[in-house]
Image (cartoon, rainbow over all chains, first blue to last red; front, side, top):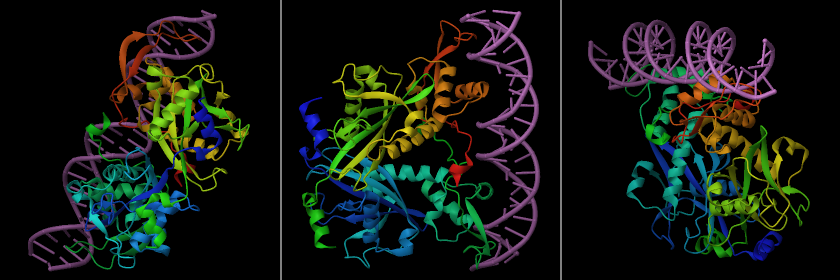
Length: 250
Length: 250
DNA sequence: GTAATAGTGTCTTTTAGACAATATACA
DNA sequence: TGTATATTGTCTAAAAGACACTATTAC
């Protein structure tokens, strides 16, 4: 053990300063497309670039709390509606040069939200917006946020497979067709309506019936659909797997 | 936006100091039991307690590098043998009071290693040891390390389901029976030998034959077994699922 | 020989997926 | 009326799991 190591064990203050931020990859679905909450940076570094919402942890809060606070501030959301947003830790990003100002370790989080009002209304009018994920390849995000978003999207796709979190993109009551639209939007391809329907109902605790149906049929015709709410399962068993993509396996 | 927030955006140095450590939940298998690498702390806080190996990130290294360095230092491992150890990020732990000295955010990592020589030999003879995971309930670990270990164990169990990482607990060549023993040890229950055998061989890229067999049969009899090495799959498809435990689903 | 293990065969059950049919409601 | 959608039915294929059997080797 070097003397430096010993000192480190003995007193962490001996080490150079590090800042820790919580950043949030917040996803929602609008018009059958996936949207991501982004903030346009006003100040350098990366002034003018879009970046993930996030900020430095306050002394008295853990990073999950920090992430939820940042999300509340940027979306203008609060109370029950904020509580319905799913928030989980994604991963930490710690490349020494990822922020030119100083050493900043980011603990990224992933959020699933139902369609929300546009931000900035209630907030201090920063330039915050829900942008279509499909447009991201044409934009360069600040810092390493492109990588973080990619990781978040992959985690989201994966989470829909074995958890009931797809329901978090919807209101408290929804139809099987709306739930299928969430899967199709996040996974990016069409699913067979009949098989999906049967599968969802066969997984214990995924959804439970409300007994009611929609007021009207679909916009382009069709019968009224039954309404469901999220069930009590935390995991889907058996899971709802994406068709295997050979590329991702090897 | 409060002035404090603005300042934070503008200059992270305005925030109180935080230290960032990489801690490692390093697992190995000995005698059909799961072992965890622990360090006995010499200094307060938690002097005399067992703790996860870990330490503060140096200015020029990211946390994965830091975790691998810590693992190398504590195991006395290096070169090819260290490279064969699987290391992945687990999660970050950030409760404000998790370290009484100051704010310390830990980015925990998870490592799978083949059976290794006992530590301390080559190193600076700290009190480091591989301890049976089964004994942990009787020990109180330092800080929030019990929680971190629990999360690591659950991640390990889950990873064996859909990745070929079980092979990382073994040498470069192994029998199907040895691979099955890894699953049985990590999952904590017996598997059907015949069905496991067929399943492993049926998953593309999980293992590939070396053409050779073991020199001798099993210690208690039986034919020589064929030898395999890890294949090129990164994911198992279809996955090798644990029997569903009703408790974990709800 | 006895016992244990490797590896294979076979059958049943579960699940996934393709495809079809029917009923409902919008335009 | 024509079309889109919800829901259910049916059949096939893939996979999981139970169980049995043979061959090989340690002792």
